[in-house]
Length: 121
Image: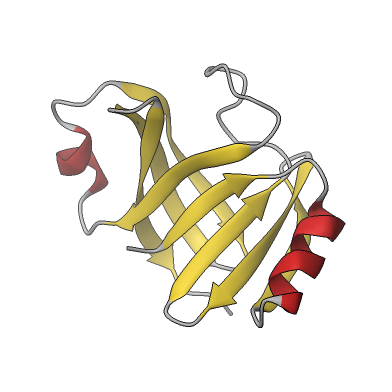
């Protein structure tokens, strides 16, 4: 498990909430025409987004749980048998370089599969 992704309308308010709850917030940045930040709550990481990367292909509310992100050593094998809603595509950021894709999952959510290609510098 890499993280849980949550879409928020007000990133400043969300960061303040998690910091008051004792979380450490790191890597806030502009990313793909939106903003993102990583929230560390003990062993759990929540990545907050102001817009989902796949928002043009999936109807999403203004806020809410988006998807869990899972690491894999073989993205193509993981995608076999799934309905892909976005990707695969190579993305880069504070997390390094990854090849990612999103698939449909029960409950109206998606799963993100991530193959790490280059570690953060």
